[in-house]
Each structure stands twice: as structure tokens, then as C-alpha cells.
Image (cartoon, rainbow, N blue to C red):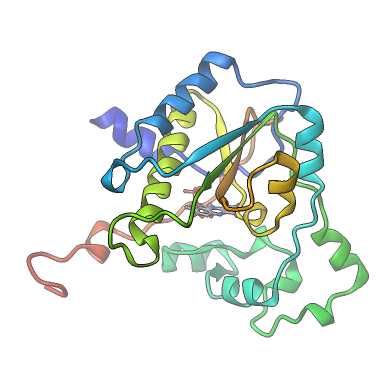
Length: 232
Ligand SMILES: Cc1cc2nc3c(=O)[nH]c(=O)nc-3n(C[C@H](O)[C@H](O)[C@H](O)COP(=O)(O)O)c2cc1C
């Protein structure tokens, strides 16, 4: 149990470049996919398929897809930002603002106010990685009587966590890239049928250099636990 808790706690998002010349060993990739295979899903629907991308040319094409940022994203993201480590330590939720360009760190963000340099900075390609997993699902199927397929979507989260914990246990870093889910370009490059939707994509690999540790925060257990009665 302690080992499991340690694994859960050591799993983290590693957004740095991964060495593109150091592929994931096939037996480790097989173990990661095996972990996805055994994910729990509502009604055991197993509502996912995974496109494994390790062809350098395809990775390069995906890395250079434009991932436009919407004003809505930046405005809503602002609510999650702490502008210092002290603030983040106190809030215990959200992320550190320095991950994002300075222009994003204000509540009244407008795309129209950005300079040419700021727009160019937003066009940076995806950091390198030898492997990308693109998890897709069919939104026309749903878990029985599950409004908006809420239960199906929760199931996709279970796949994500299984993949992530398996990768972590094998010493492989992972980074979720939600911005690849919105556009149709990834689907087009990968030949994913129109009817399917990208649930999430993740980069996996071995970091090119040791990343400095960053502040990771969580609420205390007591802050989200209610005994016998909500609020009790
Ligand atoms: C559904 C989901 C979507 C996420 N999308 C992104 C993303 O697009 N880019 C990113 O850098 N991290 C993404 N993350 C990672 C979270 O930001 C990260 O898990 C959170 O800040 C906690 O940090 P940790 O993973 O290091 O514990 C996503 C995580 C989840 C569960």
C-alpha cells in the first residue's frame, strides 16, 4: 500500500522536452497499454481506442499544428492561477502563473491586445517526445441512461490515470496536452474517423535534462471530506 501511495504521489506532469532519440522500449509501452486495458469503465464498455504515435515524421507534423488559444480559455484559466509560490501554497489548488506568458496573467485578457512577439510565442511547437498517445472515443455511444455520457467520460479519466501511473512506475514521464483535442488536424493526420472524438493526448518519454522540482499542492484531506453528512 505504501508503494502504491508513493507512486500516486510521485506521478506528476512533466512539460519539458523529452529526448526524441530515446524511444520508449516496446515492452514498457506494452505494459502501459496493458494498464489502459484494465481500466475500469461504466458498464465495462471500454469506450476508448488509443492511437500510438511514434513515427518521427508524424510526431513532427502534430507538434507543428497550430493550437490557437481562445480568450475564454485564458480568462477562465486566470481564475486558477497563483502569481507566486506563497499564494499557491496558501490556496492549495490551481497552478503557478509563471507557466504561462505574462500577457495571460491578467483577468481582462484580450487576444487583440497581444503584440506580434506574444502571438509568435503562442505558436511554439509542442516540446519534443518520442511517443504520443491519442485516446479517442465514440460520443454517439453512451453509458446506459448517462446524461451527456458523464459516466463514459469519467471512464476515460480512469484510462488516463492508469496510463499515467503505469508510465510513472516505469520511470517514464508524461504530459497531457489538451490543446490537441480541439482541432480536427490531429484526427486528419492520424486518419481518425470523423465520428470519433479525441478524449486526450499525452506525450511520453525520458526528459532531456533533469527538471527542477516545482511546487505541487493539494488540499488537505479534511478540506474535501465530509463525514456522514455534507458539511459535517
Ligand atoms: C483532464 C486533464 C487535462 C489536462 N490538460 C493539461 C494540458 O493541456 N496541459 C498541461 O500542461 N497539463 C494538463 N493537465 C495536467 C494538470 O495541469 C496537472 O495534473 C495538475 O496541474 C496537477 O499537477 P501534477 O500532474 O504535476 O500533479 C491536465 C490534467 C487532466 C487531469
